[in-house]
Each structure stands twice: as C-alpha cells, then as structure tokens.
Length: 177
Ligand code: PAF
Figure 1: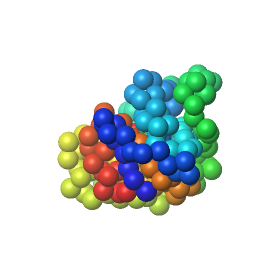
Figure 2: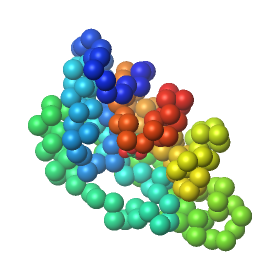
Figure 3: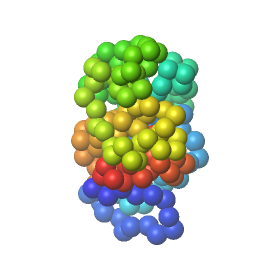
C-alpha cells in the first residue's frame, strides 16, 4: 500500500485500485482535494469517517467534536466517493475507552505515560511522539497510529491519502505504513 500526499504529480489510474481517505468527518476543502486526487488514481474511492476517541485528551472535548454525517455524505456523493466507512467505536474494537479520561485525569504516574490501560495500542517510536505537539498531548499519536492501523487493516486500500496540516502526524503515519 502506498501512502500519498497531494502533489502536482498524479499517479496513473489503476481501475482495480482502492484509495482510502481516513477522516474524522466535518469534511472541508482539504478533504475534497484528497478525494479528488484519489478519484484520479483509483477505481474505487472510500472515505472513512471515525471520530477516534483514542486520540483525544481530557481537555480536548471528544463529545463536542462536530458530527456532520448527513452533510459529509452529501459532499462525498458530489465528489464521486464510492463508499463511506463510518464504524462505531465498538466495531473498531475500542471498548471501555471512557477509562482514558479517568486515567488522564488521575494523579497516577501512569497517567502521563499510558493513555488507556484497557486498550492494545500501536506505539510509534518515542522520539517521534514525545517531541513538539506530542509532548503536550500524551497518548495522542498512539491513538492516531492505532486507529490508522485498524482502518488500513479493515479497508485494505492500495493507496491512502492524508492531509499535510499536521506534519508530525504525517511523519508518524509514513513510518507506520
Ligand atoms: O487527521 C485526522 O483527521 C485524524 O488524525 C486521522 C488521520 C483520520 C486519524 O483519526
């Protein structure tokens, strides 16, 4: 599987290829440009919409994250997306994730090191997660890496497309892929 970033070079269309754009919904112009690129390069384009509880910290309000599925569905239809994959947390094998809040909020020494004691997680190299934004968001990039791994395993795309707004996330996903 190739991990793609938007650029002026467009790979040739492969009619049997599947392109995946992982998102947390609330689709905007940046997502649409990734969809457009995927549309040019793959016979089948899938957008995943999953607000990943594992990548939110206690002061980052998971509950208030925008949920705009109807509007997202409409935008995907207009953009020629073949399928939306919008699983529940349970369907993604994420259980008891509420405990993350309790663990982060506790004064336990484990709190800063372990985002969720009840989850098996993908742990990217510490030298990529404990610096820059990762140093202020314990567990965030483990949560991202865990869900991206699950999405890639479930959808099995030939290509996946990620925005470049978060350079640290992009570098971690490249390493993971
Ligand atoms: O960048 C995002 O929208 C999310 O971090 C991602 C890659 C969809 C994983 O939840």
